[in-house]
Image (cartoon, rainbow, N blue to C red; front, side, top):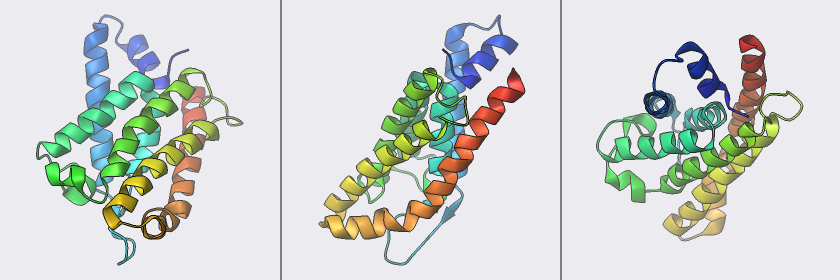
Length: 191
């Protein structure tokens, strides 16, 4: 099986070489994450992690592009931000972000996009009955990496859970439900 965006790009741009289509999709995925990262709300004064649209973008990019393109988009996104483009949450950029409080979440984006993409390549995001599975797994992966690094950064697992997990559960649940509704609907529209 293929995922949504590569299927559409092949359908609408059949004469374009596959490497050029892949490159364009990877860049577009990184730009979507960068755009939604600018929706950043400092949630609580005790957490260095803002509430952003990044997670939603990671879920969509992983499912829409597949494992390889989706994870490549996340790697490109991290490189773009590290090189100084204002792509991280709230317009942040630079190498210091890659060792800061949110670095684990950035690494988690790569793993999440890959696994969500793998599950999408098996068709799980096409049916409303199964579409929540890839996104639930993806959010879990992001939390594992993000909270683990935050625990190292804060020198405390309990502080990391309080600052980097609990305040975000409701917002991320809404994001994964929206993604789980959007992908089956998109597949129905294009068939």
